[in-house]
Image (cartoon, rainbow, N blue to C red; front, side, top):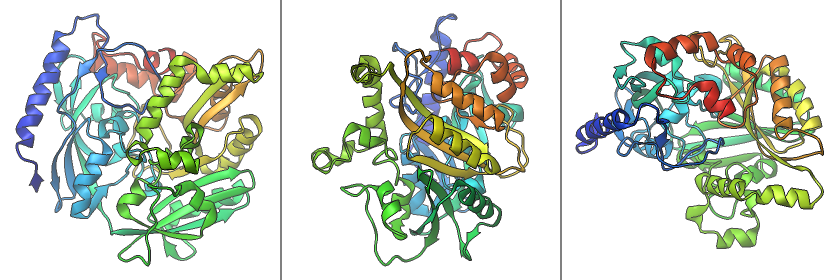
Amino acid sequence: MTVGADAGIAHREAVDAVRRGLAELPPDAPVRLRKKTSNLFRFRDGGGGLAVDGLDRVLSVDPVARTADVAGMTTYSDLVAATLPHGLMPLVVPQLKTITLGGAVVGLGIESTSFRDGLPHESVIEADVLTGTGEILSTVDHPDLLAGLPNSYGTLGYALRLRIELAPVRPFVRLRHIRFDTAEETATALAEITATGRWAGERVDFCDGTVFSPQEHHLSLGEMVDTAPYLSDYTGQGIYYRSIQDRDTDFLTIHDYLWRWDTDWFWCSRALGVQNPAVRRLWPSRYRRSDVYRRLVALDRRLGLSQALARRNGAAGVEPIIQDVEVPVDRLPGFLEFFHREIGISPVWLCPLKQRDGRAWPLYPLDPATTYVNVGFWSDAELAPGQAPDHHNRRIEEVLMDLDGHKSLYSTSSYRREEFDALYGGATYRELKARYDPDGRLPDLYTKTVTG
């Protein structure tokens, strides 16, 4: 087992500090984390919060047991940097570097291994959680707390330490970009890959997709290999998602594959001009990353620049549509048909998902026997005169409910309370809330994710 110097002592000191910080807050003070970065798109005013300094390190990696002990605010960038030298990676590595392990567990995360390994919380073996009562509880003794963490968004407690499973890797990834003309063909292929782990007779270790139009769908299938005839680099002038249309086969290091989306935040950097070759050459490479772009989006929201520009061009305004949703694979064509017709954003991201086992995760209940497809779309849509500010997001929610789908709660949500409770385990949540935060020190889930 590898252990960083004095990591255990430093972690205990950080845990004591955050516990004291919670105890010192006035009983009626809002409790939230003071984090350096965030991947949420529910922007809020005000500062303050509970300091979590020191809870951002990998505590140990056990290459024999294939596990890691990790502080809750550790970014996946730091986690991957600690595990890859051992030939290991977390089972699911969300695609943006500054997503934290604790954030991916309580707020969900997904990536191209999810067709086989589910969501990040499914590979958590145990966790230490600071609850609203100020207690630090082990999920070994409180399995219901572990089951309730996913999709709780810190409203039941904060994960201070997590022990997770790791998976072996090879040094390189060979990519095949397969084009399909219809959503029906794409859905059929995703179902087959999820069921068999293979496509056209070859092993599939990673699977995701990109939809450029109703007539152009690409699945990107990765296989880990020991050698590569060449290596592509999409951290400079090259843009990864453009390569999907331009080449049938590609090779990346395992490190660059895991972070292939971060340099351009999928394709969202184009709205900021970063994909313009002249701008790209002048934009320092250290600032070509998703957390920088998010800060620019936050600035735009505060200043209202996009809204003013839309009104100047004759629209009633723009509605940010930054969402990840899950639909059963056989209903993917229906969802995409609606999305192209009414929303019109492109490209969109596809990622197949199936739970690893039959365990219940009550606050984000998925059918273990069903293959789902995550559809990700991140842009603005113009509003017509008379449309509500959340018109498009509400339509997406209505269609999802008709298709037995779900959506993540990291961004705008408009669900009515009864809809929310039915979709996200309302009765179970209230039981857990009464057990682990009886005085309501932490926010309520519906209030935090919907009404603000």
